[in-house]
Length: 271
Image 1 (cartoon, rainbow, N blue to C red):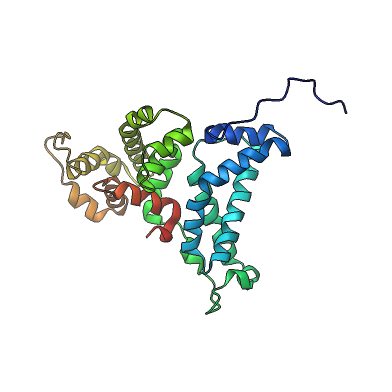
Image 2: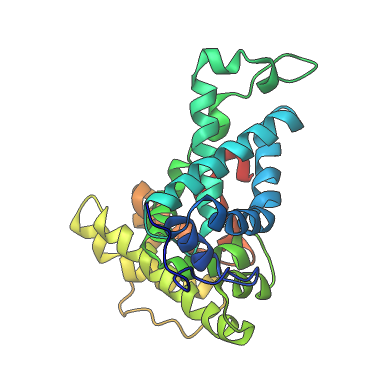
C-alpha cells in the first residue's frame, strides 16, 4: 500500500475546536489522528459524566468504570456515524443506559467492583429508570437541533455560564447568548407539538394552546393571550393525566426547566 502523497493529511485540530469538529475527526482519522480529539473530548466532559456516575454507583471505582464505559460507547458511535454538537447529554444518556443494563444483569452486579465496598449492595435498577412523567420533555429535547440541545442543556440543566456551550460550539459567547431565549421558545413549542401528537383525543389537542398560555402567565408573562371565553383548563387537567403532565412540563418558572430536562434524561438520579 502506497502512503498518501504529501500535503493530503488534514492539519491537527486545535484544542479550541468545536465538539462537532472533534467528533468529525474521530470518524475520518486514523488512530494517531484521533488521539487529540479523544483527549480533548474527555477533558471537556469527563468530570460531569463522572459526577453523575458517582450518584448512581456505590463507589468511586464503580463510577470510574461506568464513566469509562459511557465514553467507550459514545466515542465508538461517533466513529461510525455523523457527529453531533451535543455530546454532554449523549454521554450522560449512555451512562444511564449502561448502568441500567448492568443493574439488570445478575452476573454483572455480582462483580465486587460494582458493589458497595462496605455493605456489598448493588445499585437498584430503579435508579436508572427514565421518568415517565417527563416523556414530553424527553421527546421535545430530541426534536431540537444539536446546537440547541447543547445550549439549553448546559445553561439550564447544568446551570453553566453561556461561555461553556459557546466554547463547545466554537461560537462567540454573544452569539450564543442571543440564541438562548429563542431556544427556550423552540423547546416550549416542541413540548406543545409532542402534547398534540400524543394526545388521546381531540379535546386534549384543543386545550394545547390554553395550557401554554396558562403556563406562560404562571411564568410571569402577563401578556400571554387567553382566548375568550376561556374554557376551564384546570377542570380538564384535573381529569386528564396527559394534559396535567403537559401543564407541569410547560411550567418553566425559576429553575424548573433545568430540572425538567435533567429528570427527562437522567431519571430518578436527577433528584
